[in-house]
Image (spheres, each protein chain N blue to C red):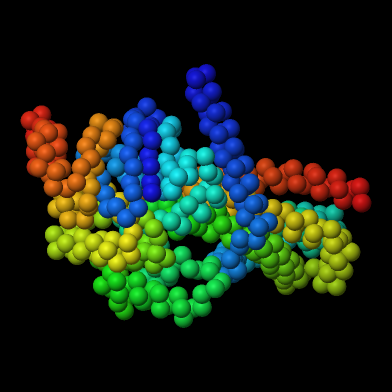
Length: 259
Length: 248
C-alpha cells in the first residue's frame, strides 16, 4: 500500500516536472517569436469558431435556468427586478468562463490530445523532429496561444447570450417589468466583473491547451494509449479548471477589494 | 562522417544495445541487419538524436550530439533525411505540403520555387502529378516514396532508411531499392539502411553490419558478408529458424 502511494507520488511529481519543462520550451518559443501566423489562425478557427455552437447553447440555457431559479426565490421577497442583476454578475464572474472552459475542454482538449497522440504513435512527431522542426514550436505554441485568444471571446459570447436569454425568459415568460430589470442589471454589474471573467477565460484557455498537448505528447503507444491520453486530457483539464477557478476567485476578489 | 562509440541503451530492465561501436564515412552506403527487436531502429534513432544513449557517444562530423538539447539538435538534424518504416506522412496535409514541409518557414523561397522543388522531388521518386493527393489515398509503396521525396528535397548529407521495403510486394520493393540507389548516386549522400531484406541489403549497400545479441556482430563488404561461413551470419542470411523456434 505504502509502495503504491510512493509510486503514485513519484508519478505525479514526474508529470509536474515534465509539464514545467514543456512550459519552459513554450516560453522560449513564444518569446523568440517562432510562431507561424498561418498555424495560429487555423488553430483559432479550429478551437474558437468551431466551438461556438456548443458554447452558445451552454450560455443560453444556463442564463435561462439561472434567471428562472433566481426569480423563484426573489419573487418570495418581492425582489423580482433584481433577477437579471444576479444572472449577469454570476455569468460574468463565474458561470460564463467556467462553463465555457468545461465545454471547450471536452471538445478541444480531447481533440488536441487525440491528434497529437496519434501523431506520436505513427512517428509523425519523430518525422517533424528529423525535418528540423521543434514539436513545441509547431504543435504546442499555436494551440496554446489560439486557446488563450479564443476562450475570452467564447466566454464573452456565452455571457452575452446568457444574459439576453435570461432577459427574454424574465420578461416574456415570468412577466417581470423590463425597464427596472435592465436598469438593475446595469447598476450592479461593474466593469471589473467583466474583466474577472475574461482573465479567468484567458487562463483556462492556456490550461486546456497545455494539458491536451502534454497528454498527446506523452501518450502511450497504440490505440489504447491515445484513448487514455484523450480521457485524461478532459478529466485533468476539467479538474484543474475547477480548482484554479477557486483560487482565482480568491486572488482577484482580494485584488478588487484592494482597488 | 558518423561515429558511434560504445553505445548502450536500455528501456527499463530491457537492455537493447550493449557497447555498439562503428564508424561510417561520408558517401558510404551501409545496411544494418539483425533480428526483429534486435535494436536496429533504436540504433538508427540514436544517429539523428531521436533517442538519447544511456552511455557512449554518437558523433556527427566530429560533434558529440549526446549533450545537445532538442533545439541544438535541430541544427544537426538539417544534415539528415529520414524515411520511416510506416512513412510517417503528415496525414492532415497533401503530398505537396508533406514534401515541401522543410521549406514552410524559409523566407528566401517563393511559393513557386517551393512548388518546383516539390515537383522535382516527386519526379525523382516516380510520382509526378500526385501533389494534391492526401496520404490516405496512396498505396504503401507510394507512401514510402513520398516519404523518401520529403527526406531528400533539401538535399541532406545523410539519408536514414528504417525498413524501407518492409510490407511491400517484391516488385515495389525492387522499385524502392532502385530509388535508394538513384538517390545515393545522384545526390552523393551517405545512406544507412535498416532492413530485413537480404536482397535489398546486397544491392544497396557497400558495407553490411549485423547486430546480434545487443552488439555489432559483423561488418563487411556485401560479397564478403554474404559468403561468410560464420554460423550466426549464415543462419540469418539463409533465414533458418532454430529447432525450438519452429515449434511456434
